[in-house]
Image 1 (tube, rainbow, N blue to C red):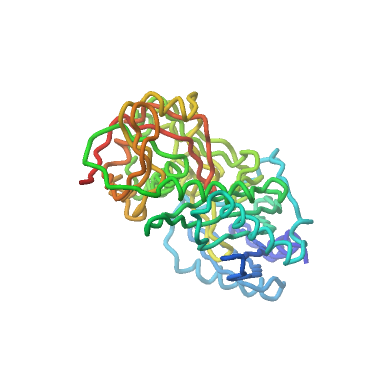
Image 2: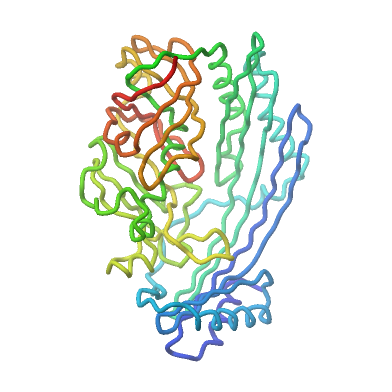
Length: 444
């Protein structure tokens, strides 16, 4: 049964004009392959489907879900959602979105590549590993070289007349390579994704991971210092990912964001513009609509250093008398929506990375951080271990490791003195090379 047809059938069972009903359905199928030493470590095929139903009446909201996509299971889930709404607290901001016209987003899709034989897909993972080993003889191990592909189909409809559906595919490649020399070992990681298989990097991912690992061989501890710090794009994206919840309107309204009460104020360097764009071409979070059916859009969160907007779903927008920014997301059909990022990224600047480095007399280029999960997204405080390359007179001089970098996210953003041209994506988070004018490093 087509997903939208089932959603329409469920909505036809709601005869109460004061009741709002939303039906969200999804189907997913994925393949994931990992190889090490060119041997298959794991090969997984998975699929899931299900339906979540919300019922709203008199400001009370109930929710239920089912993993069986049949009219009988849907009828039971609808009854359970209605029952649970009876015990919910009243909240006048609880409502469902109205239809808002047709989205102009066109998603690339490659269903034919999903049907390739498993042996071909295994070979994709092996190609990644071979490329890493071929890059440098000091690559002695590969902990994992991974290929995966996913297809999905989503539909959402509600009793206000909204009814939308879309489908798509995406492919990923990644590797964790180990370089060894003189009894020391260093790790290098790389990752790529694409909407179509032909656009997916395989060999370049393996080669980059090898290069990152080899570059750190012979790393020594550095002395404590206060110097400019340059963050590699993937490290900058990791920092951004740790603080992404601070931009959610839900976090702000609950007092759990370091940006509460700061809308319209200068919170970062004028060089920094942070954007969430659900319409970004080929983005992994790109879609015609969000998980409530609201068209996705481009939202400037920080513009020229000023906090311009938070990310809203229908509920959080209603609480402030605003419109949803198209950022309602769900973990799956088993959950209700909440605001979150689609494709969140720091806009590229005007300096090539080598130009940016060339202006630094003495500093640190960070290629890896450890302990980012301990960052506090409410206070903005962080303390992480770092490794990378020491900068001397505008050039990368020697590898260093076991450096502690502690600070505050707001200070980091206000301290940005340069933004590179090299935007890089790690999932739905993107960043270019960025330079912070001065940070404290703890070493020997």
